[in-house]
Amino acid sequence: MLKQVHFAGIKSLLDVTVDLERFTVLVGPNGCGKSTVLDQIEAVCEMTVPEPGASEVLGKAQRVLTAIRPDEIRTSGTDAVMRWRVGSEEAGEYFETVIAPASTAKAHKGWVDRCTVAALAENRTYRLATNGTTPAAKAEIEAVLIRQFSLRSQRLRLTPGAVAADSPIASTRIEPNGEGTPTVLMKLAVNDPDAFRQVKLDMTKVVPQFQSLRIDTRKGTDGRGNPVDVVCLSLQMLGAGMVPANSVSDGTLLALALLTATHNRDLPALILMDDIDHGLHLSAQFQIIEAIRRVMKVREDLQVICTTHAPVLVDSFEPSEVRVMALNKAGRSL
Image (cartoon, rainbow, N blue to C red; front, side, top):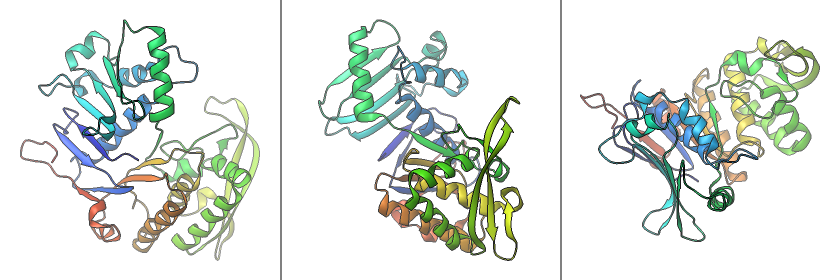
């Protein structure tokens, strides 16, 4: 579980530390840095997962950083602009990623300058530069990363149309906008029937009109127009019968995607969710929080970090789970 993140010089996050719980909600006005926190956690999680067969342990990190505009990688007076760690610095048991100042990053075309890893088990520190590290050292670092610190996250910025859309049968995850939900649900029904039944049961509590769902396959096309087999969803709703997914309410679709993500053990256990209340009736907002808590009792590795603009929804969280963000007069996050 992530326990703390620290950011420096990233957009409005000049020098911000956020302590995290298993369920954490970020609240505050627009532009105060809530989504930026989620963006940066997502990016650094990607850095910790080496691509299969990659010759460079940080190959993925390099590609992630080349997508970040140089003016978003700024120095704050130290030799590191963003730091992320798991574990305890005091105990010498932590994982830390360091990104170089903007001047150095530009020289390396946005590549990671170095990554410092202190292995939880061995309590040793490795330094990996973009050049000069031996293949043997890289292999050792990669083994440590995969064994100890490989973290995956699901970033969800769900849109109803994407959740309802037919998805290629080859899909393996839920995309941030919700694409892939039908295929992931189909695979959940086959591989973990108990979890699939729980998704449907939780749906009845969040959306009382929901009764069941049907999963079908048919011929369709992928994003490039190539013919592929696709998975499509229909939902049985009280008073309406079985209807295509794109005919039900936005809140129903968003709840279905979120519950699918939380219940599915094949998907990343760290969920980063923008506007968890989006599209949901007030009572459904509270029900979705309770549903996630029920999943957490079964799925012990699940951690959810979310944002909300609904002040009343904060009442469904413990005080220790709420992080209030704001901006000072200089436009910096507090």
